Amino acid sequence: MPISEQRGRRPSPSGAAVATPVHSRLTVLSGPSGVGKSTVVAELNRACPQIWISVSVTTRHPRPGEVDGRQYHFVDDHEFDRLIASGALLEWARFAGNRYGTPREPLYAKLEAGVACLLEIDLAGARQVKQAEPDARLVFLAPPSWDELVRRLTGRGTEPAEVLERRLAAARQELAAADEFEVTLVNTSVQDVCRQLVALIDKCDLRKAERGRHSGPPGRRRHHQPADRRAP
Ligand code: 5GP
Image 1 (tube, rainbow, N blue to C red):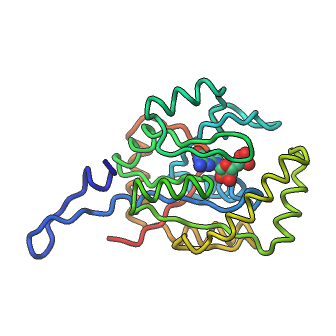
Image 2 (cartoon, rainbow, N blue to C red):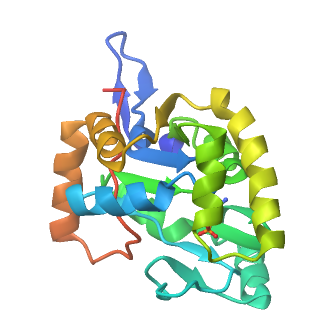
Image 3 (cartoon, rainbow, N blue to C red):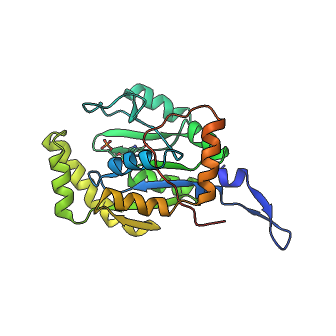
């Protein structure tokens, strides 16, 4: 059952119960590989550490400098299969030859505690989250131009040519889906995007996030980010 149906019911002026959109506390940041999502998330973590960032599970091998449990939980195919079978993932998707998924339990524990949460995931995952949690806020991060995206992806230098090709093909499809998102931010500058994301965060959510951070057990963090909130 979506978390929005599990909690937060309050009386409407007419006396009927209406669901409080608790999942305006859930923000999904998506966009093509190479657009700079991780950099934006890292900056937001620095600027807004009260926002909880989900740490995904992946079958991809760690890049140099990546630490298990920090950027990702790195698992093998067998473990990923087990997580899917046990229902431990809110969503999962294949991307450029690897699988990625969002652990369900830690995310829902934070949302239930009133903490603003952010997922940084691909388009297929964002669609699944929207289906499971219709009140989740979907934000699309777009590159300033296609050429700039190609430059960023190839400039990273961490992937072989064949993987780059797959990522560029996926990027074409992801860019075409920008209309499915409620908000599109163009990543001309990390600081500007961060400011815009922070502006989407409801102060009330941030206060709750702050309380959750100090009162609950420490969650696994990836980086941190703001969630916005449109609803009351
Ligand atoms: P990378 O391998 O560059 O870290 O990530 C590749 C893509 O997978 C990125 O677009 C990233 O947003 C996406 N991704 C990361 N974690 C998840 C996840 O848990 N679920 C889904 N569906 N995509 C993810």
